[in-house]
Length: 462
Ligand code: SAH
Image (tube, rainbow, N blue to C red; front, side, top):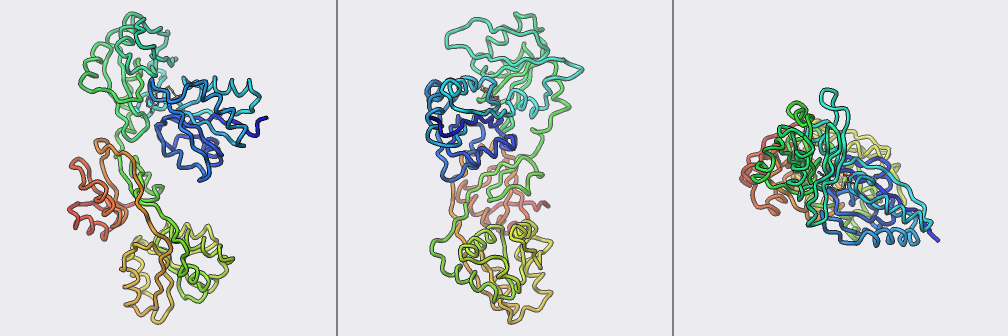
């Protein structure tokens, strides 16, 4: 008897923002996730810590697990768990063998649901500025697999359509082009390849059926990639948008507020962790009501402070008589999750900004509580002490270095430094800034630290 249900979820083509709301919900709540080699491995970080993550492979032409075994594993996992998510690249039913997977569920009495995904067949052209249909070009589009077993050189069946999108075709492009020509497509028909579609390192290459193979010789393709054939390819000249955006590497913890600056490649290199048996923090939350001011310099400080507060059976009412300062808008927003509002929130998000605000009021002899990261600089506590305040600085959490994964700097235009520590972390990890990459930062203190490290960073407004 099956205990649970299988959810076939389309992961989308690569850009993590393109998963559906329903898919995201299921990923967050799954007891186990069976996943392919995905264009967006970041999606797996949504899984709850206790979830069992199982890679079932599927690289071009190299399956780490035979399809029949994947099908059976789904059924077996549904006997073990309540919510089994099968995460598949793009859409589940476009060349993904999703149909076979739920057929096995059907045959063995396991309930299932299928959540469609954004298919690469339409998303990669879209991000390359190519609409698969357009009134001036064509009223129909076909999706074709160019995949053939090794050694099978028979021509590809070419459908009658104004636009044809070829998936799984990189190793067979020569055969595809000759099949198109044999099917009377003019040699001048436009063709485009889009590799790593919707990912930061997307690249597209355009040509015509007659010159495309020569072009590819000079620019070997990376997989995954697909081809688009038809007049719509000419629209790219006007409709390109994604490849024009600056590609910005961000190593900090949170990315949301920077999304409008460009394509954000979010690869945190530090992660915040609680400090075990943190007696100073426990004592601080218990006596938090005795302080005149509580100062937060990050959303993380808020997270760990309130976790400790709640763990000690207390809640926000403890702070009824304590004023609160937040370093910036995002930090102030995090306070609202606990029903609180900041009394001070400087316009310029920085320690300097906070000190300027405190300079306007008299804090002589006032008791200030400052829960911060263990590595926080002394600038703020020193400045506040110089104003005559009685400052208690607490290590609320620690930071550890984590692996940012592979980054191809050929496809990065800018690095955004959000703090001095992000400059140090970058240098530790990558040595120096590659020549083709520009540095940007949020404020003067970070700019100065970048300069000390030989990096000229331009200040940007967010
Ligand atoms: N179900 C998937 C397709 C699976 S077949 C979907 O709906 O997208 C795998 C093929 O999809 C690859 O060989 C490649 O042609 C194409 N593909 C998948 N992701 C891609 C991407 N990010 N960019 C370009 N092509 C991609």
